[in-house]
Image (cartoon, rainbow, N blue to C red; front, side, top):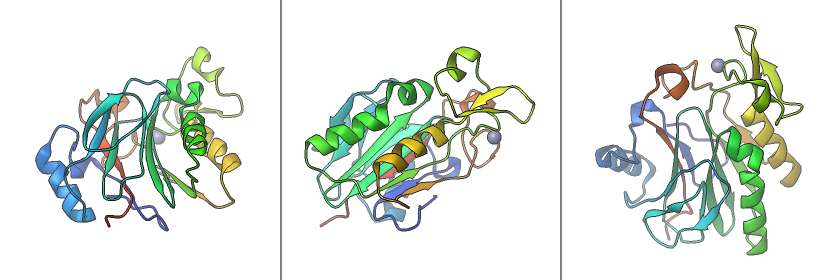
Amino acid sequence: MIRPPGFRGAAFGTARNGDARVDEAARRGIARELGLTSEWAFLTQVHGTDVVEARGPGRIAEADALFTTRSGLPLAVATADCVPVVLEGPAVVAVVHAGWRGAAGGVVLETLSRLAASKLDVARAAIGPSIGPCCYEVGSDVAGRFPGFVSETRWGSPSVDIGGYLASELEAALPAGAVWRSTECTFTSDELHSYRRTRTRDRQVAVGWLPPD
Ligand SMILES: [Zn+2]
């Protein structure tokens, strides 16, 4: 488990923690380690920009951003190369799943606007492990969507830095120093699932929660 420092309710699972979306034992294991219930709220992730609220556990909707104001209700998104984000504020927590489509569509900014519209302040953002610019080879169509975040893979082909793109959006919106970013690359690390590396169906989960009462 990766615990971003200074966060109250944010954790990024690794491959070793299991796929808590589908594996109840894995979910119970993570819940125990974090001192949480194993009744979580999830999304059916569709690489879109919809933001939904969870008022209880279960599969909430087809969407890629989920928030709650309920204490002790864990929220999770699952990834294996895409970028997981946890946002926390005094009265809210949100989790976001962003691949290049969601990032280009503005799913993180949509989440911030939705929370702002509900007068829910965001104090910090944690960006979990995803495929890095070292390995995320893309065509010119995708590269063209991320001006300023085009890079080069270790093998010399065009790549983009989706985590960096989201970090810059969040840094512009939040107080200085409020954004934490994992330096792990899912494609490179054997500890993390990478769809690009192994075509796996397995995912690691990112969990966000408001502390239980
Ligand atoms: Zn890499």
